[in-house]
Image 1 (cartoon, rainbow, N blue to C red):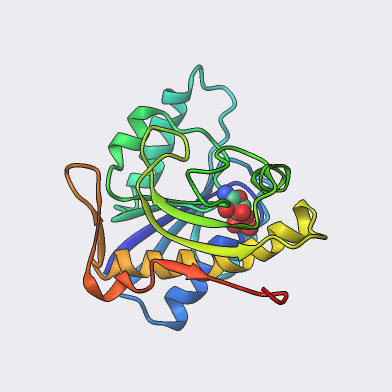
Image 2 (image 1 turned 45 degrees about the vertical axis):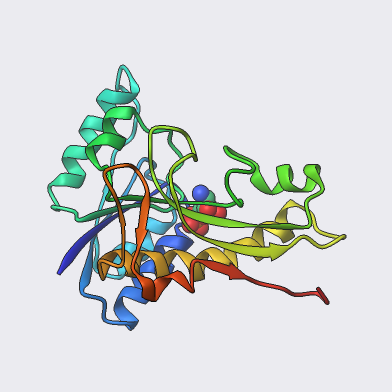
Length: 217
Ligand code: GRF
């Protein structure tokens, strides 16, 4: 049974999609804890209601990023995680933290990386005039939104989209792709090798690109 710890900062809809899939599909895994850097993260209530341990650690009072990250890691490590999932955890992580969890730290980013790193990805996509946009699940490395890509979902950008409508379309796909990749990790079907490359077992290769068309495209 693998232990999974999920970090959130807000609504936690990706976390919820993983919790639900884990339960409905009887994964060989347990969501051991949901941890937030903000005590007003709405997702904490869902986790509590689901009987999952929760913790909050505010960054206030820590002199620098690494000292916060070390305190956070000591909370996370009390749950002996095989995997730490960043599900809308809105903090830049120190190199120490990322290296501490090398090969067992996953993130979802709401763009087709390497395009549109950082924040406001949907507006960035609209401003760039791209016709397709999407989401990426990747292993985390010290480079912000730069880690090795595991899977991506692609959605069309429609002429009348604004950042909100586009975000909704992408989010729907995040909720498909992220639980899928976490399950692969649980089943040892995806890993990071010592050269920093993603290794996929043959049975998942077909599913690494989700192309979602719609609106007449
Ligand atoms: C998602 O779009 C995720 O990709 C991004 O932040 C958002 C978090 O949403 N990193 P939620 O908290 O999972 O609902």
